Length: 356
Image (tube, helix red, strand yellow):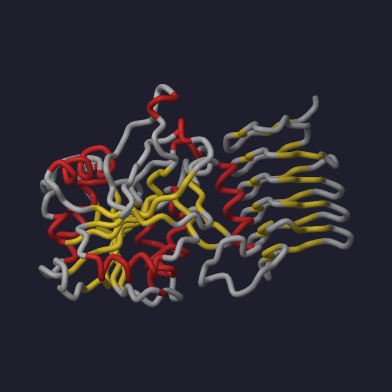
């Protein structure tokens, strides 16, 4: 492939996960559609793709596809041709890539960008693409280094950045031979994609990439330790939203750094303080002298007078009263909270907690 001018204007977003670790946030909507800094995770990812020249995007899913289609029918701020490709049966990350790529009708010299749909990243995608186009590699994988490599599958590389192996999560200190992990952004040549059997469930991380190495395909590890966050839990989701608002990580959809993102249709009473990257959605209300920091208040939620809420999530139509002070709690839709809740507690929808 060296010397061939690659075309790279198409992308696949892997958005088929059910997001079980994020419940109750994902009981009624897929994880990539959760609003982060007021807009779906998917929107921020597509905006980043558009900024590097991508103009056609496929959302590969097998879970709540209608939610994606409904959003696409109403959004008008992303300058790309966006389609939803639905798998009749879940195909895993590898099978989903092949299925979506078939829909894209790639030319022989085309490559695609593939993003995991639950990752917030500040890495230099434009530079990764430039290196990939000039290198002759069959694939490029964004890597980051971590301080706790024992918790991840590891991706060692040689001095030329060529990937040597894809290792399972280590079970002993001797197995920790690198602190590099897969960060969920891939550049894949059409030749690589054609190695994936159509219609066959498989994992790109555990099946496709190791087999490519066995077949002597050259895979580059693109190391970029910029901001990286897996939005796999409610608390990382809350953190990611705050980081976008405060521009700790950049999105083309966030115009400037703010202490809070407050919808024009929200109400913040006199004496209330909203900061730390908090988001107050349409119809939400913040009572007099309330303090909101690093939190997400969904549509039509209400925080009563004097309430203090830190690093938390308040679902649609839910209320917190009685001047409570809550930290790191996740409250689902249509709840009424009038008692203290310990940090780390998740409240499912339609729950009332009061003192009798």
